[in-house]
Image 1 (cartoon, rainbow, N blue to C red):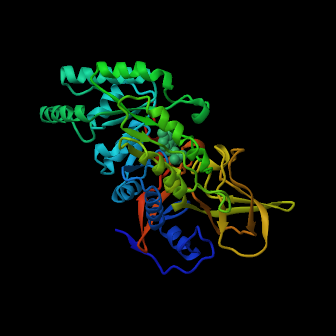
Image 2: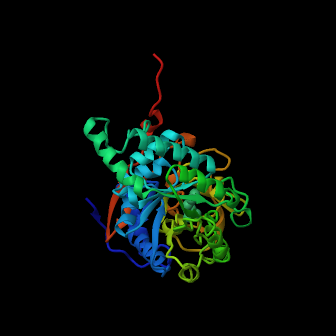
Image 3: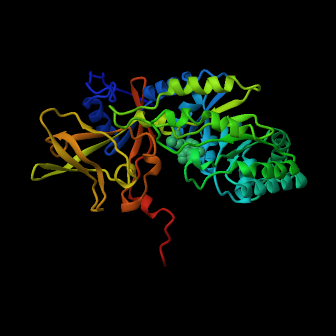
Length: 439
Ligand SMILES: Cc1ncc(COP(=O)(O)O)c(C=O)c1O
């Protein structure tokens, strides 16, 4: 059951919209520290804003859950009418568990085994953006062998489904319905616009691929473009729309365009932000000029979810090196791996006022890269003070790990003036999970 929040005092920081020190203290007193806190209203506003920004009528939005796989947050996307974009079978598994129907999942992954492809078909997935002609070949073989033998694929079983006769019959029925609806697309590899990427298929491979698909009674009807993650320059997307569309026209059965993925988020709040409205208008103009109605898929990850979350932590130690403040906090880059290990910047704030000092915010391990923030501007802090690391909704918890052997924080969702736990804090037992003690 959600718990009611105490009234929210005003705060100066726009990103901490309605989020006060009192609320931080209240949450930490209940759920302990460190703590991921997601603001449901901010998430819904962002989803709404992105959805509204593309007027093209045949547009579907699919949240790229590589950025965040929390079931409760996925359910918010579902309730807002978005589907899921899956990078891996694990993304698909979480989407189905969160209640998405298989037709709301677009799979665009890489290097799947035949068993995994069969597993995705068993789960009812119908849209596949494939990474190579070799993957297409495997897909066609799996698909044909399922059709010929009319058996369910080995390896992965559907969620909650065991191999009894009733289920096998059900899957067979589903299979014959699915085979009519399979949508196959290619991930595009065109170095001048996709960069030096290992992913995707070159246009000069299309003709061969179309023939391979034809032999399996399938069509290549989609093209998937991925600009590369975290791009705030709107032009990097808008200036290639025509080229992507012209490339897609090389596919004789072209029906859909999946344009990524990759839209940036302004972690520097005074920096450049991706302009959804101008992107939306430009892609709409281009697609409306086509002779045929093309379905558009947009799969934002970080742009949708980064800004709704903060990581709360407590100061456990303070020291000074000349004029620099070295603040130790009770979290680590393994709880939030992005800033110092994988690059990038996250603003760190405290609710204290007063003169600010150049401050390094350091994690609670001796790992030499355990900096949550370097050269931040923060006031003098003391043991017990609370800090918040902002914009951690994307690639935050999702990239956390047990490196350094610190259990992961809990996750809490704030919505409608109440809060609820959406993932338990781990304890040290997690470090023994799957380990085998010798006799
Ligand atoms: C194909 C694809 N789409 C979307 C995403 C999400 O990217 P972003 O968070 O940059 O929107 C990824 C990330 O890896 C991806 O590989």
